[in-house]
Length: 333
Image: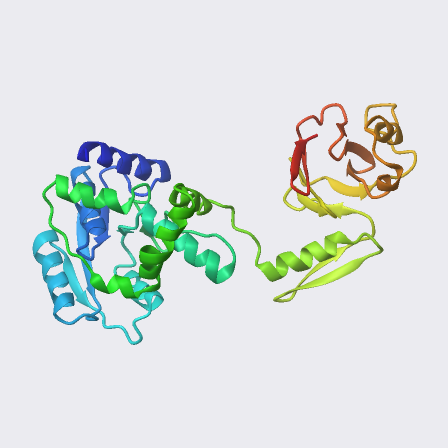
């Protein structure tokens, strides 16, 4: 382990996400484990003005008191007592983040924690999602580019002692760490990296809303409404679909454009590509589109002008401005 190189990676991550101002103040929330000990030491070594806070939940009797003593004596941490009523992971997290809300706080979450979070959210909600680099309440995660093994190696390289919490094995995160991840690594050695990549997936709509919108957009007969809940309703007017935020669904097609002025509608006899004399019908013939498919083939229009025949051709000036995906295939038109 080359400690200087690891600190450089932390600094690059902090600067890229603008987590802490250069030389700025930050309060490290420390448990005494390798991750938070590495966080505390590395940020100090990088020139940040670091204070420490340990929240003692008193869940493990003498072991909890020893953690508090360690953080106070070794890391100079202020110790606050915050017993938990139920002891759930969510309750404990909320308690820790309730202290010093007016200060910039940093936690020692690593890429390993990110992977465990992605697995839990996939299983519990059916969607990926990870730990935020910068929470809305002012909590930042400077170590998300490091793996847990690296923080432990950093502590050993710098001669830093740290505490181990055996109770972690009894949590949901502990189950994922001890049993599920080893099996996933047997399936594929790149499991950790691939799961970490899912943390960066763009957030999607709640599943129920997404399903209703897809059903709404899949039909093109007349007008139709869908109740999205919370007093929101979506309306589809006859055979035109507007691109919302530059994106629309049309049957098996997903169409994206670089402007929200576009709409999607089916082909109509006599249609021509804007700026061309060639009829869209001839475009279909040249592309060998079966006659039975033409009436449902989406055209991208701006006002009365056809700017693209999905997946086949663009009007002059619209090259590369509309992208189309049909089933599992993606092509640029």
